[in-house]
Length: 487
Ligand SMILES: Cc1cc2nc3c(=O)[nH]c(=O)nc-3n(C[C@H](O)[C@H](O)[C@H](O)COP(=O)(O)OP(=O)(O)OC[C@H]3O[C@@H](n4cnc5c(N)ncnc54)[C@H](O)[C@@H]3O)c2cc1C
Image (tube, rainbow, N blue to C red; front, side, top):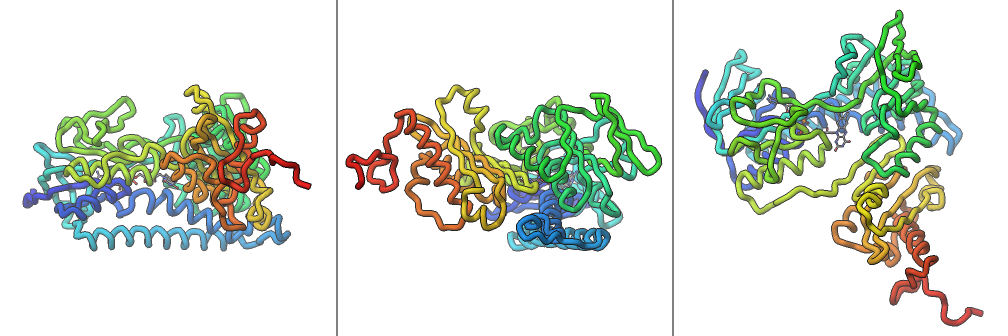
């Protein structure tokens, strides 16, 4: 063991959670070090958000998938060439993301040590460095953050040794696009890959054991997504579970619990995440985990060991946006900073499939379960100038609002830029806004944002039909019946 160094804050893991925490602490002048065993940026900058979204963008660009039917010009490119470009673009974007985190850390004066860290006694961290022949270095800290993230879950009955059975990490090593693929798991990652593969000309079957795809989304939107995916030619098998996989020469035989047997050249599993806590020394340091192995934290993101905090996927796999916020809030509690006290309880959930799906706030199912007296307003993109121009006719924005005071409770969308569109709904919910505001605002046209106005019209019209709404005071475009007949 070499020298002992002291830091105010030692952050283990340089992904979004570690990044958010380290930056906040450093901005407030705390001497901070991040220990990272791979590259800065975490899953986002290696095999997660950035590369998958790059693949999606590149797939749309190279194949002309999106505009194919509008212009009648299907993009035709040699698949080998597409594969080469996809790979190099993805690697380029990941490198830029990693470098951007490195530069931010440098600007904020945050030290970075590359190596594998574990907790030692009395709030110390032991790092086996990648450099210097793998020697161990010991750091003491006032506060420690565990932000070691997660990795793909591997069902025990499946051999990932098979070269054609992939998880979301191994997929980035795929040598060429397969002719056919079975995607197992109808969550965000599964739906994203299924639609990207399909756009690239792969024959795709999507298998999910639940009763619908994208279970975190509003039911109507998730059913619409399923219809759109099927319309693209993705074969959906819902409510079915993969029992086992057998290799027959160059083909994989996938047996389902329903008795069906599917054949495919490749299988991708996207069936959840396992947390990275192995070898972290949690027991010795008195850090408790739950039955799923996730680190247990209190409202301040402090673990059962005083001064040791945890944030991000390691406390429950979710989103990069959520992880980063958790890291920031954890740092605030660790050092008593007023910057941020709690995380946003209504984050946007976005799925970057083709098309995008996004939602915020209450789904219709949740509003019903909570016994709320609510109404729904919908706007179909096929009636929006922007939707018609772009040829994206299958999109929809759905608003869920209280009948008594018209407060927006949830906004859910499927279609082009749904992930961007939903931001307006998010802000309105947070500000306690009524859907009437969308009636008042003059949105730019053509935009998808206009969908808010038409969804509000639709919702208010339903109330008006029941005599529960008689218009908006001082508004030209209210639902007042004219007092005098217009001649
Ligand atoms: C395919 C895919 C697509 C996704 N798309 C999106 C998306 O579009 N939007 C979104 O918001 N989220 C998305 N996510 C989720 C998002 O990637 C995660 O929620 C986020 O990365 C979690 O951040 P984190 O910092 O907790 O962990 P990670 O990103 O996993 O980072 C943890 C870091 O800790 C390091 N580490 C682990 N153990 C040690 C150790 N002992 N010592 C030192 N370092 C260690 C790891 O190398 C890693 O860099 C996606 C995930 C996947 C897999």
